[in-house]
Image 1 (spheres, rainbow, N blue to C red):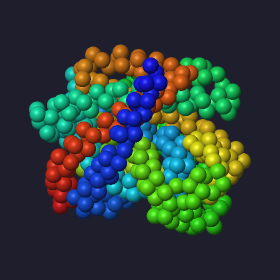
Image 2 (cartoon, rainbow, N blue to C red):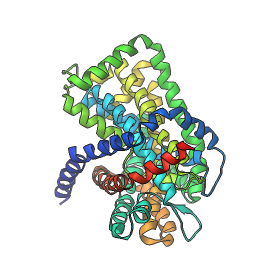
Image 3 (tube, helix red, strand yellow):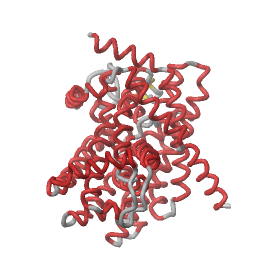
Image 4 (cartoon, rainbow, N blue to C red):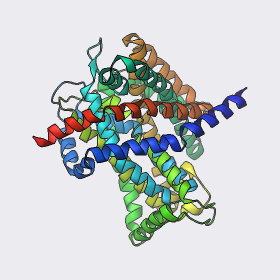
Length: 444
């Protein structure tokens, strides 16, 4: 029975993450970028200026704009930046990184549009909290005839959260600590569940506060650790960049334990892992941005688009350069093991950068996705679901740490793909609203 379910989910996953969805994700990003006249690229310095100002609250909302971005980043900066990058290189070759960059550059416009619409169409729930995201901009932006699409997004989001944002994450942490330090998986599960409970039971304000402190610290430590390795081998960086660009258009022959990759594999896995890492187009991040204390959708949109830039252009690139410069990419290892080998062979205790990076990244992902799943569940069941959902979430964190989660991972993968489709339809249909609001803001 389980084998049949697994086979069915595998088939569904291959279909939902096949060429059609990937072309849609990239296509919507390109369309929005062109419609915005490439504004997201030109306004990166301005967006960082807004982010600095965003530490202070101004306007309606529950958390400062900076904390909204950190909450969104807490969910996206995770295993995708470490294991996902390594998997992309293992299957698609170094050229996959080039296509991750392309996905991120156009994904910035997608994230911008998501955050703009999230703030414009958000609501206040019965508890006085600001709620928003794709289900709300579908309902309030597209009208009654599209209610079914909003419901589907919320349903897929509620289910997907337990996989990608919960059990898979606690399992990754437990496995890493057990492999490297011999820590019992149930003990790890208990500690993570207890720490998660302390934050999650406090709601978005506590999640925002913790994310606002933990995410910048973990990102800076990871970047500094990576930079130390890159700067020590600075003369090899130009060659590594050449390998990435050349492989993107010519594929890469087998080398060492690396089986070789075609251009098509580089494109497919570059785009897929890029989306998995930065979540542009999935519709998750706008749920966090809807809680921001702001009266201006465009300002939050610009802060929101930085999530994709920081996640993929900065953090994923660091991981990729270390893997390529170290030569570990031809070892035949994949996933977190490949990243661990690359960092471990490049500097003393380098493997601990990966181990502790995975632990902290996974923990913050659990926090961010708990909020996403809770908002999706609230859309369907109302505010009465909030406490039961939080308690169920904490229990699932513990269970995931010591169980085989292959089936959960597959289900989450499928549901993530299903989340993207309603969101992309809404982004395309509501794009004139995004263009109009943006034009008005920048013409002032």
